[in-house]
Length: 164
Image (cartoon, rainbow, N blue to C red; front, side):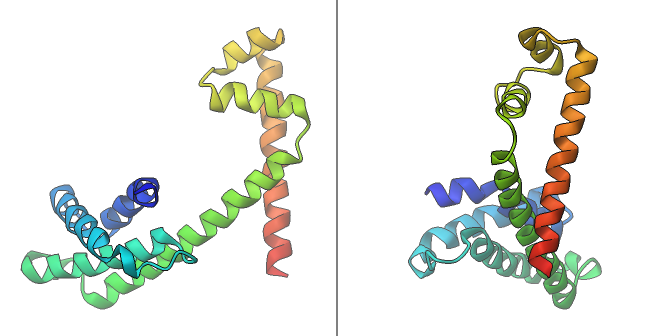
């Protein structure tokens, strides 16, 4: 159940990339959820649940397209397969970047981590962070910019090293 709830929004966004109508996307998500429940025993725990679930969602989209011929003007099966493949590659790349972000954050000084936690994890804005840290707001913004730049460069280095 946790796998499903953690992946729900990703699966639904995937469906929305394939279906132009929100009501139809909701219908496909419901059907996909039922199939996932019935076929959960077939899921291999060493693989990506989201990728497996999106594969099932793609099949459910095709079923909807067969039932509702109005989709013929928008998509054919080959195009749908291309979109699904592109989405899977993008999702995989995003997951790699997320992992690298976690690694890069662990390399930051404690003060930088504290600022990031204040702003992004405890829902305080930059003004509140400036007040808590007793620094001018402009200093907080410059500090955040330096942190973001450092994280971006760290992620890019790791991506380039993985490609090499």
